[in-house]
Amino acid sequence: MSRDMCPRPIRDSDWPNVAALEADAYAGSSLAEGRAVLESRGRAAPATCFVLDLDGRVAGYVLALPYPMFQYPDLARAERPAVPSRNLHLHDMVVARDQRGRGRGSGLLNHLTRTAGTAGYDHISLVAVEGKATFWASRGFLAHQGVAVPPDYGDNAVYMSRALTGVRISGATKADRFPCPVP
Ligand SMILES: CC(C)(COP(=O)(O)OP(=O)(O)OC[C@H]1O[C@@H](n2cnc3c(N)ncnc32)[C@H](O)[C@@H]1OP(=O)(O)O)[C@@H](O)C(=O)NCCC(=O)NCCS
Image 1 (cartoon, protein in one colour):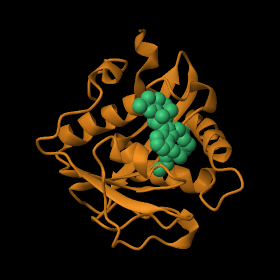
Image 2 (cartoon, rainbow, N blue to C red; image 1 turned 45 degrees about the vertical axis):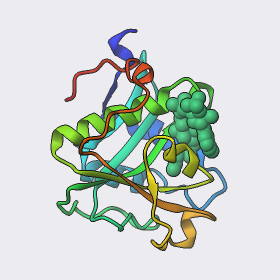
Image 3 (cartoon, helix red, strand yellow; image 1 turned 120 degrees about the horizontal axis):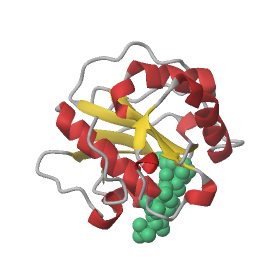
């Protein structure tokens, strides 16, 4: 596999493509934030936001930023400067429709997990939307049913988290699809 397929940091020129992926993934739902808000999230924590670059095509992205445990971004507001935390909140991950089911999402998550561990985070949290809780549970995330999530995250949204200490990255085969050094 060429190094061109590695997740890489987001460049200014990537944002239109990131916004297009987001719009396609969440069309017609309250989850779509739009370019300006997405960009504000990415700029708040550039070291933990990546695109999946497939030979020059932006075919996925992951946006993650430090957030105190049990808190999460307000979908209607641009991000404010990041608050230091040892919890990394995986705000959004999207893979282009024609690239799903090939381990791309798992590869992005594994890359993020390695990056987070190296940077000293001890947990990763997220809000599972659109029925994805089982996807995240199979990747080591535990649901916190008692944490309320606002309606604009959609029906059945679930706050979940995973400890990083002592956790092996799942899916070694899929992880090998992204043999990238941690930046
Ligand atoms: C979630 C997403 C990033 C996964 O990307 P991907 O490249 O297809 O992920 P992978 O190929 O690594 O993994 C796919 C696996 O997840 C499973 N999966 C996909 N959607 C699922 C769902 N809703 N519930 C349970 N499992 C699901 C697939 O069956 C497959 O299982 P396997 O690993 O046993 O083969 C992609 O589906 C996507 O972009 N979805 C739209 C945006 C979204 O919902 N993001 C998550 C927000 S919480």
